[in-house]
Length: 320
Ligand SMILES: Nc1ncnc2c1ncn2[C@@H]1O[C@H](COP(=O)(O)OP(=O)(O)OP(=O)(O)O)[C@@H](O)[C@H]1O
Ligand SMILES: [Mg+2]
Image (tube, rainbow, N blue to C red; front, side, top):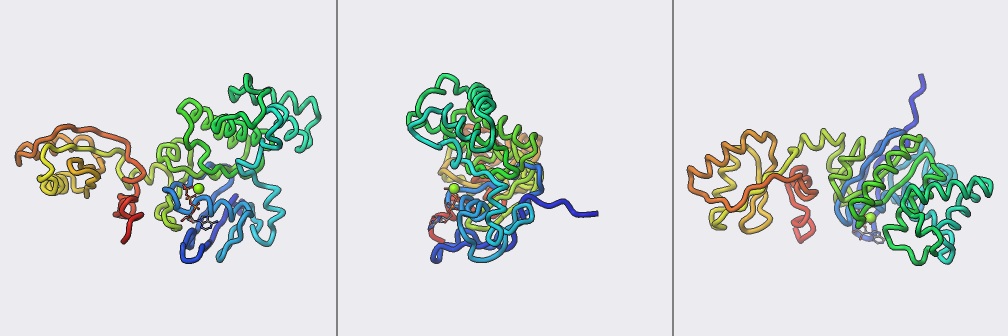
């Protein structure tokens, strides 16, 4: 039996900019037919990794293969198999959105009428019908990104890199984008998606690699990652900032977890079992620590990092 070829296989990949270890010994395996999320903060090395996989940048060390083809030795073969958002759609800034899409379809070998029909259909789907005749130069960032993704639906390459496709988009547009991304996979593409949003990775990705400072700090299915960090975060605002250490000790005693203290009166802790919250409130009452506010939130990326590495993002960005 032959082993199915993975969409991406990365081993020991490195890229240094001077002494900045942008990508520092990364291993990744992305099976074909999935959405693979790469989650990490600013400067983690997400774009640098994609640039190497997309043959736009040469690795300093390690190897990377796309459907079995080496990104350095077989760069041309790799380029036939991939799509990178940002490179589509904007064939000509002065031309309208529909003209750009039609040209794009023609370049991919569609007839004039096929290309026009496809372009019209996609513009409708992406809510760009009214803007169809406007030149690209007058498109907003969000409209442009929608058009990019529309163009990738025409091409439907086997592997698509989406580098933070929804950063800065309004919620409605973001949901639309998510639907499109799911459709690309249903039609047979594999997607490598980078994001700074835990929720986005959770919604879309079959597997997630969390990267920070050029290293993979965790890898697994969204459920595996959430299990390791707790599905929710407990936020407690205490009345008296002087008692924060005591509050942290109480939480450790009752919930058995470490806490974070992002603001003088705010203390956060991973919440694994909602039933234990009552015990905690009773314990606070017993020691006489007053609370101004109690809330339960989805863990932020910062809290994921804290849970995975024991350090906060902001602390890590500062001097060590
Ligand atoms: N061409 C370059 N020359 C020098 N340094 C670079 C270059 N590209 C990236 N870097 C540095 O490499 C590190 C990783 O950058 P990268 O763009 O890969 O991060 P990222 O995870 O994509 O971040 P963001 O979420 O902000 O897009 C950063 O410290 C960045 O400053
Ligand atoms: Mg980036």
